[in-house]
Length: 440
Image (cartoon, rainbow, N blue to C red; front, side, top):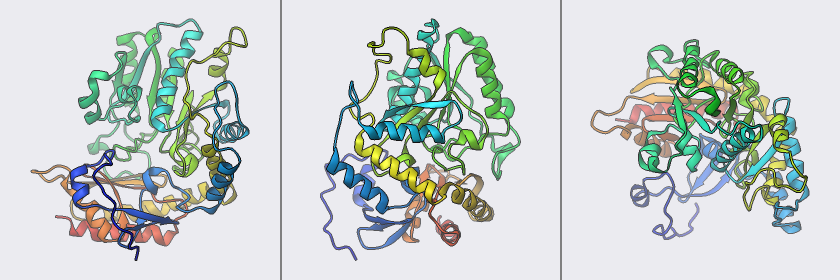
């Protein structure tokens, strides 16, 4: 048992957390190995959501540890303003090889939030470079989560974000309806058959605002943070067709789905729809070091490569864009994924997860189950007097049962590491069954 003393919890203002509740009922992770965390009291819990969707290789990977240690010893930091270092170029080239054909330019940030804002800036800069300076409007989607930057909050559709920070939102933004209709989609496996027509809402926004004012549409191929909302068959294809016809850029926010979560390098390849930009983060470094970025179609990049060659083409960037230690972690992560065939393994585990999780259909309080790739969500009936209480109760009961679950309101999400065994996935769902039976 780990007997390290409990630290002073008062100073750290925790993100997206009920701080007062946590500090009265703390759960401290003190170690991680494989698909498990170790709690402060020595108990091990299965990492049901791969950290926060970001540790598909599990914890304590020696290859990443060695790469990070070696890079710190060799070159701990180097700016990428007007100078460079080799690993940023190496990682960008490797990511480009993983991406859909033609998407071969990579701009680095430090997180998914920053990557989203970068993509939106690139979209507007692209249209300006082509003489379409009126194209400044961004179209997002209801229930979308695009991080916590001002651009991401503006394009996003998480009600709490917009309710609290709406005064800061960008002015030229509109939203598509979300694609979840439980009456049509309840207990769907993979992509629902109903709902492709929901993409036609984009035509209404084009008619309302005029296509000549719209720069880009940004969507998550699979909406993760709002509860694994899976795109209907044909929906993304229809969005792609409408965007192409009207000269609007299509951005996929693949912060969650990128690097294997749906059983392909990117959701774009799994769903056979190629956007103009892909936003990534999370799994690219297995969560070891923060890193994000935007993969851009070459024609967008080249449109900005105009004027004298000493001109800064995109007046944007971050001190830590392409940080050498983060790039070393990224190279090691992608090497392990390729060497060990882990994306194919994620695809194989997807069938196990689908079979097992839908077996929870008749458990107490369960009103819907959805899945795609190695991700699933279970909706619980809210308590009439306390919405969200059942989700939190499932989380707390999960800790007792050896599971670190992820809950949002009354939705429980699971997305286990790619290195999980079939038995571990089955045990996760079996333990979750016990949890649901204990939730009031």
